[in-house]
Image 1: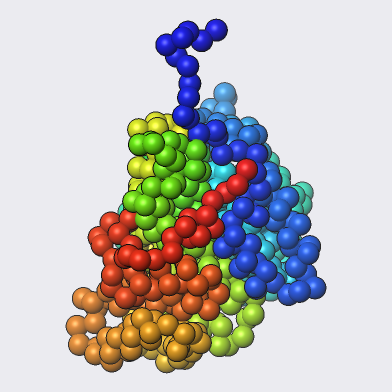
Image 2: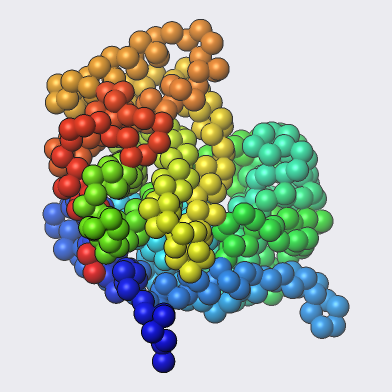
Length: 544
């Protein structure tokens, strides 16, 4: 029984028991915009079912448990045999199992597949972000494997399956499989051409043995991995299975699991190859070209994962402010807090809108859309992932001391926030990738300008920003040193053009006034006056 000195008042109820999908108006509208009418009802029901699961107390508990009980490496069995297995808490398997059975590894072969998967990834990642890594790797492996029709025929049905089967056993005995990836080595980092892992051909065409290491191996518990190694003709892509067809374990020595800032539930390891059997994927010497589509797909997941973190952080901040009273009124009604919440909501909605637009481009698959993705994906990856950390930090502050306490869930979001900016190439890598596209692929710039040009004339601040960007792009002197500046502007202009076309007027007005019009401070909560911010905040509220 609580004592009279410990009566609990003025504490918001937990944000639980709601539909994460339908409560997110920006996401709901994006799905309705990009999914074909004949498919829309099915997709809505599918995502709403996932959204109710994501908003449940059960799923939130799984997320806490998976992070409180991180994976453990078991290198040997009791008899001294090398097994190299990673053990996870049951909550991890429940999260990953729900994701797989909900189709979050199945985008490439069903109608509207990328939009529905991206939306689902954004919804379900809000329960717990770490298990998104194997989902992303598995999804992204498909286009790389398609460079070899035999490998695609063998593996694609398992990778896109809605069956979760975590057991390590021969591929032929599995109806569902997960993939990881290993490109990074100690001496090279993002410079994969500095890799030293060697590939020696065997007598059978396409078969090799690998010797070397990987400094970061994503999801080392998976059934197979795409890795890069040096063959006679240069850097080449290979498929490394964990279990051989006869049931023997392939040589895949997990030396240790990384202790990371965040992403605690997920295993990232250092692995050694020593006579490890592998199948070549694509041609010798064309490893980067072979695996580049996998990289592009995972970069989109970086954008989506960051959008998910932002959305959950903003939803928590608005929810807190809607119930918490201070200085004779609810926080949500205080003009200064409203400015902060609206500013955060703008960044969240812009990220979600951009992620779904990129997914729709994948579904369209036209040459124009593929050219657009060549610039838009690295630009979005650069900017959205960088904005994630300050958004989550400010949202945490909206909860005050309560937000700094682990039980609020906000510290876990904050630890996770920097990851996507680093994963699949950090900021400079993305900026330089955009520069390469600008210099070598005129169709990519044309596609980008066509996209942002669709909103021309609708907002004078957007028009001025497009004109200023064209001036910036016309001057190539010293452009590498200006790459971050250029790519940031490209991403923000693209977001602005999408919001002007599709968001409510008050959202587009506030975004253009601050991000494009220059009337914005160096911290969130500095939107100009006067703007109609009440509907911006209300739109971001997750109503239970």
